[in-house]
Image (cartoon, rainbow, N blue to C red; front, top):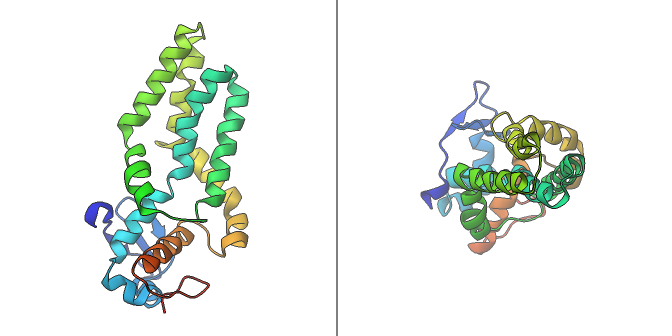
Length: 201
């Protein structure tokens, strides 16, 4: 259970919660205690927020892992950029559609580690260089990785552009909508009833 634990801190206005890694939940602890109710006796809020902070990484993970593969196949930086960005936007639109703990724990969480990211980008760079690509093309996946992870400009821009679409689709933007989905997943696991908005009854 504690594998996803994230300590939560109230903001100065006490109307939101922030994790130590900077994820912001736009509801107070009191509001979330009321919303999730009995579920919190079985699944602590800190764990569900930790699961949320992992699940919201899916769009950027898809972008980082797809880029060197698509670039190697196409050898076309523009097509690769558009394809990887398109995959990222698609996953960002639908990461509130469902939630699965096993996928999060055994796939998303390990994939967010720096070592597999470094491995896929090194592998892509080596293969590109071996096929006669220019050096700048071989280092392009590393630049894309940096813009998604270390200075997450691409992720932030896409989230700003998609916030209205997500709110229209799911009534909440990320990460609040993802947290609701996590709560619904665990409520179902523990045979607790929820209403259409995900509130535990």
